[in-house]
Length: 66
Image 1 (cartoon, helix red, strand yellow):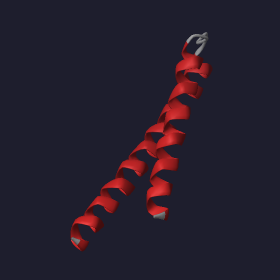
Image 2 (image 1 turned 120 degrees about the horizontal axis):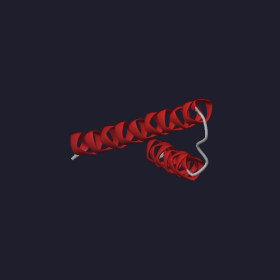
Image 3 (image 1 turned 60 degrees about the vertical axis):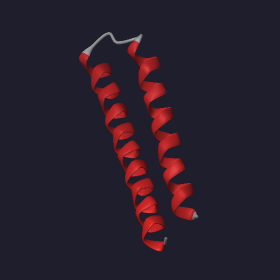
């Protein structure tokens, strides 16, 4: 069950990071700010991939137990 909670936490964090990036897009004035937004999006993508991988592992272990 903790794998499910970890996966949901990762997906929730990704959602928050992408929302933060979208809010920041309205204020892009220079390359330094764009780089900061790219960093947030990269971190969000990594969290999203981790969440998806965890959910796939949970699904695979559930199928194996069936």
